[in-house]
Amino acid sequence: MTGAGNDFIVIDDRLNVIGNDARELAKQLCRRRLSVGADGLILVVPSTRADFRMRYFNPDGTEADMCGNGGRCVARFARDKGIAGTVMTFESRSGLHDAEILDGDDVLLKMAEPRAVLLNNYFPIAGEKRALHRINTGVPHAVCEVENLADFPVVETGRIIRYLSAFVPEGTNADFIEVLDEHTVALRTYERGVEDETLACGTGAVAAALISAALGKTRPPVAVHTRGGDTLTIGFYMSDVGFCDVTLSGNAETIYEGALEQSGE
Image (cartoon, rainbow, N blue to C red):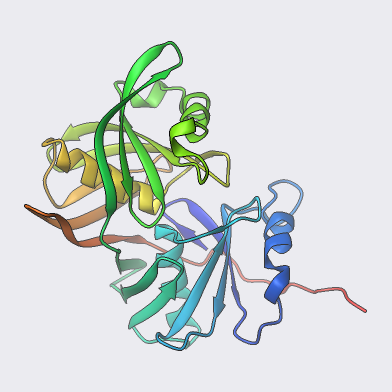
């Protein structure tokens, strides 16, 4: 499946066929050119308090708390497979999430309230001091505003930020943004776990919108233009105590379906 250019392998594992093999399976299946290839592996498993539970694994086998575009894809998958209705609640390691299938291929996902918002942290990066703005939108992000985003060395700079000692031990995703107007931001993201730039990042799009609003440069709704060419829309409200009612919406669709044959004794 793809959500704005983020691609995922989504598997219905409610019968626990994969179980403890998920980490190794993610490393095997997500390898581009040598296997199926994807930005992550998503398993749909049972939940005692929601329609289902989403487990998300990065290509390096690590399990992440949440993935915004992956959440939208798994919601579409659950509706298409009869696991849930058009309006649903699903569980991830970061909590409960409400989702709704909209007209066409669009899915709206209610995000957890952001936390750990820290503006204007300065770090020496590639020979110059840069302001990084930290926020957790389900997973940690460091947002950096740049000029001429199209030509910016995202992979090289993102790798430096991802491994800064300030973000040890969990590391961070690195988002580079260019504010185009008060409702529009361009975004490129270096994702931990993938260890490369991806065509889109849902939690990164949320981070970009909220940080640019916190800096007084945008106001909701914010359209986030992704590297893959799609646009994600971030809705939210700002108050004296922070952000609330944060939503992420955009396309989510199935590219193809297949069967995975497991060998065993």
